Length: 170
Image: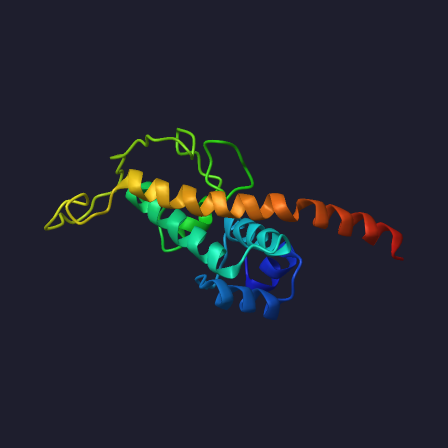
């Protein structure tokens, strides 16, 4: 979909979408996937709950990094693989932004690694030797997610009150 259709899908103007892309460091494309609209919508929801920009950026970075460590990027072709994965699905085993099911609880102490489905050039050093460890990536992600969940819980009543108030405003 083009930018105008993406903007309509997330309920914002095209300039507002461009501003969101810049603010959160999101990639721009000529054609956007449905998953990109889901990602933007989730970011907008987090902003409604007053989640700090730095936490949203950290979650984006940690989630993308974790999926790369798990070799999920090999399942999708193209530079928009991360955005294409995004779905509204949620649950204990799913990452917040993409909705990707990692096979175990996000706050668990285990993770399944080594599911690489794509041909890659051999690295001089293995990922572990360079410090790229999936379990460590999961823990960083879980710490950021826990911080965001606390913010969502803290803001829930205020957002509910605002929605009730809005019904009275005509």
